[in-house]
Length: 354
Image (cartoon, rainbow, N blue to C red):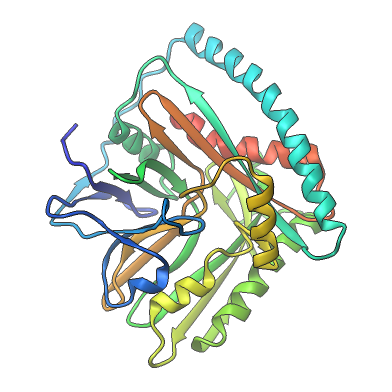
């Protein structure tokens, strides 16, 4: 592995090549909010909620490489060792299940007041392995496993090492012509599923997705001189299915892209509805700070091309310890067992990489 304190590897969906960005001169810029991106460009790594401990980082690369993703087959792990890990994970899950029970019930109690309609609860799971794995090998493995998702490895000296395989665009575009999406609602993909096959979505999933779509439409309207959107449709992400609505818009003159990003993030897909009430509940109930989980990252250039994705299906790499993150949207109709299973399916995206 090459030595560089601040670097990023990313592979866009459906692409066979990936980019490696390195910053050797100086340090990445720490910003208090996405608004401070105005007039700047580089690779953005932003948290769920900016703070002194978790600022918005902007890596300004002085070395850029483009390389193909190696398509070699992965060697299978030893069966006995894999079974031992599964047993250890099962014991940890029983403890985490009790914590989630309290978290879920406390969230439902807040909802009964009528001040909040949706809250996204996050789980943070520690996976301990016998030895540390090379983060770049994990990145390439994720690229091979998930060709339809945005794969990124972010290694910053002051923010840690993060790997993600995310399906959700926050904002992308060039020349003031942009695209974003409302992505919410989750179902396990049937074994016989084919792309485009109709799925009978529950009322709960439809409501979750509608909250996100309405929020995005209302948030973008003041900034856009043209705004259109698709019908909601089913989309695949690893072994999961989601409901998705695409939005296309053109920015008004004198509107900066950084303003739009600051207003849009976090959407109800990762926070809740209404935003501030949900964010307050999250900060009260979640024992561990999210840091960069459910933030966003990607190349940012208001005068060129911007491709920012929400940081989902991710893990923080700390030597031989891996902290996996996943969340699920809670609405009054939510059932605890179903929500727990949904977060487990999302955690498996990174577990399968390990």
